[in-house]
Image (tube, rainbow, N blue to C red; front, side, top):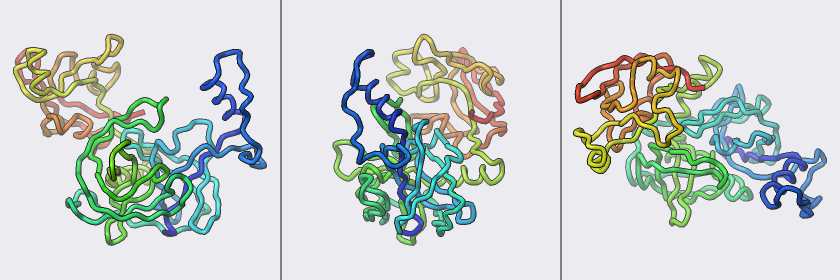
Length: 333
């Protein structure tokens, strides 16, 4: 419990009121619904949201949370400890692919939570979630089981944000509410096995957590490079299934067809590792780093355990002929 913190998100009053006017009133109209004075602090800041996080490095004061918790560009962030103390927090780095963020609070001096291994989870295993439920009830503890593994969803942090695909998630029936995002999902030994990230609207007790392995890799990158270095491949694609194969007259029943979703998109991104390796629109990628691409394993899944600058084999079908390419990955910017 002492290692879990609440994250308070605040913006300047004038920025909040400008956003309100833009959302509610057409251009040229004046918003008379000002923020009540009791919600504005002495610095002119208004609390607009909250989330959770937990300490992973006691000496440096590093806190893990979700990227979507700290995604507002104009906001300031504070962490509130279990005993009510408040500290300003700086965003150290983000891993947008895995919805992970790391905050830095050097003056915090709280014990770090030990990190476990989510790859060894079993269905039915007991788990514990801790977080700032509803942004009001800090350090709320709930208990449940692992209900499912390797879940995938399209998620939005708010109606105005683009949807993001999250893969390989842990499903739990431990009660998770808005504000729990970024808090730890623990096993019965108190080791972190996930970062609580999402709930399914309208469902009963379906919470989802990001496996802690993604954060372990990010922390290793920070220690070695001072930033998160996620690998980048550089193609747009659709996963081939029986329907896609039938519609496009494709003879293979699995793989990734390199193609754009819209007419304005380039299937192979300029200057990407894929372009430099000679991958072309219309190619069918069968495997990446010797892992087959199918309905449950995407190109992004194959990159999860790789690093920027790794050189990997890629198997392709082009014009009915199977060929091999070596792709040297780059750092995602």
